[in-house]
Length: 107
Image 1 (cartoon, one colour):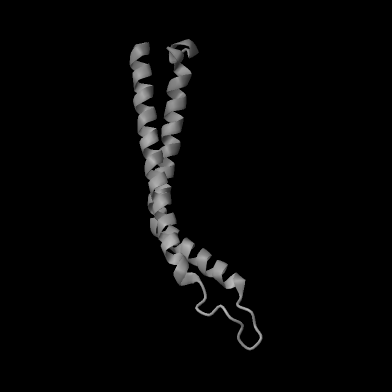
Image 2: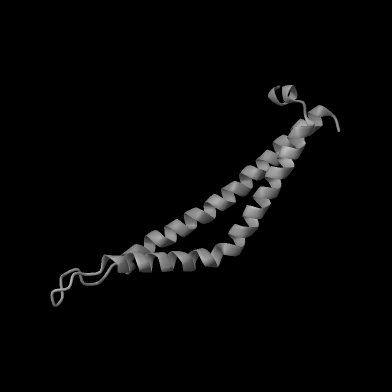
């Protein structure tokens, strides 16, 4: 393979990697959006003291974390697959770059 062909291949591979990263970012934004929509439901219904007891602030965090874990678990197979794909793409790009002289990558 000639050097210009390798350089073009690296650029295509880098674009594919950027697309994979965008997919991962999109999943992350979707999870954040769902958690943002759930926050009002996670707050305690009563905010006043009852029988001298203050509302437990730790309960909100506990409910938040459990819901976040559940929502993330729903998408975990996608996240894992895309993460593995990203790692493979990084290794392939690094291997191809190692075969190209450094001065040709700048041109």
